[in-house]
Image 1: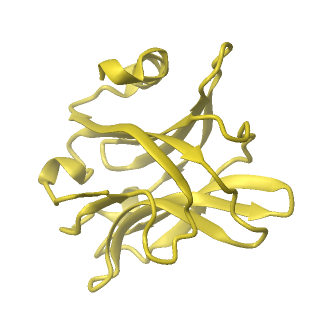
Image 2: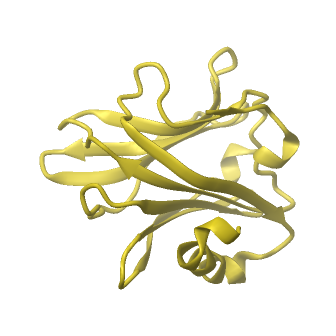
Image 3: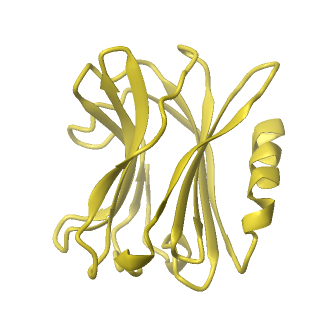
Length: 177
């Protein structure tokens, strides 16, 4: 699925940004491989972001690439996660005022737990300048096999304190967003 470029899809330094998507994996990445399922990356200018999973033996971790025109770009590795096989999970990227990158995960189930899987300071990177489309799901050679459920983007001034509450609402009723 590709969403054409729009300024609201790109994080900026004056607003908080939240991108969420429900994911259902049919296959986990092989050991030593990456499986990318979200990307807003301009290959020509080599800038933007991508999100996926990486696996080393039995350890599964989210991984995110972040590159602006000003910064060197790099892959950010987040905390190990446990995904219940063939269950839907919610993954949320939060960026507060263009400098604090965070990643949340919640599984669909009776006792839903929301985990903050880590965060990084990306302030020195600057703003993303990509005009590429937002791509969700399988991309050429991404390794992703599965389904994408509801997804969306929030962008507004200073909602950092409400992030966990927003994530809880997304878990309780994803179709109501």
